[in-house]
Image (cartoon, rainbow, N blue to C red; front, side, top):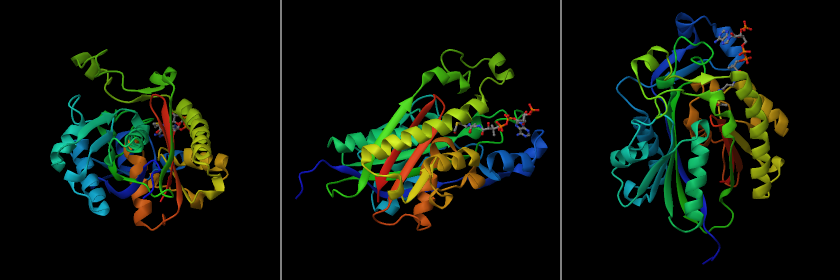
Length: 331
Ligand code: ACO
């Protein structure tokens, strides 16, 4: 038996996308926009919208069940549940606690992390750290968001970008040296807090009739600024995570970037010197699903056979905070 430090291995993945589809042409009926503008500027064609009466924990539940089935793991086997979300069912308790109860998990600790579009990467890094230190040997890591709930459907600059969804990964500890999460890197820069944020609904500006009338519970964004910093930061942190892992860019089989905008993804691939065939793009089908985007794309890539044993996969994300991160995993 090896005495090396345990690593986190991906045992299974799952995802859930709501069935309701919102097309660009349907958005043409709501705001002054066009299918052509949205397609050219963002690459998005359709997105999914969570039905009324459901919260993001419901999507997290279905994604988790699929990941657990894929992993051959039962709820009672889980030791931690960490959910990346900025759209929990309630201000409190956490969506992770809601999910824990839905799954029927026991003897587990659960919490949410709030890192917007980087929520999954942050959750993964935290779970990985618990596993590496030997505190736990299994974790369910989820990214689940329903940003449709935070959109101003009269603001054409934001309402066209986002969609709802959830993705989940089951991690297990392994002493097999070759496989697993090789490195994670996280970063934030709070000076950009108001470049992309929801002004009201927190303790500073609680819900009031005025805040609702002024649409302050919806996403406010300087898109151009986000774009610029996103590309630069994701390139930088990807290179750092690869260097930590001792992996060169040409050893990477597949990159799974946050799906915000096709132009951000192609600019990133360009800067990393990677052909687009090595980069997962599904933003056309789902829009920006925030914390769900990376685990949904990871799940799809695995199910399409795009990830084989031994492959090295680079994940990266960027979002409000600003918060960004990257991870390198050998499957
Ligand atoms: N339909 C038609 N016209 C529009 C729309 C729309 N939906 N939205 C904006 N416009 C107009 C603008 O009003 C502007 O008109 P003007 O020139 O008459 O003033 C024109 O189109 C150009 O607008 P810009 O904002 O300069 O367009 P840009 O090329 O920057 O694209 C976009 C905007 C798509 C938002 C881009 O900046 C972007 O993707 N930024 C990243 C934002 C993002 O992804 N945020 C998500 C969270 S963070 C993350 O996940 C990375």
